[in-house]
Image (cartoon, rainbow, N blue to C red; front, side, top):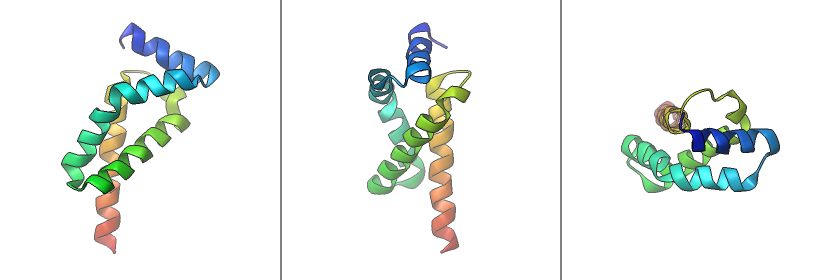
Length: 90
């Protein structure tokens, strides 16, 4: 994990630092949105999956051991696939 990335994560996990969370979102929102968009192909649905991904980050940040972008990409992919499964089931 890049040192700066680790510091941001540590600040957020330890104190709930909103600035650290904002910086993480600023850095990685396009990565998350892009992953969702590639799978879903719809801007609105991809935006919703992106929000769900960062909400998951809020809840589970203390479990991240590796790279933040890798974790976010994995979660975003899962959220996008879940949306496809939900739509298919309807």
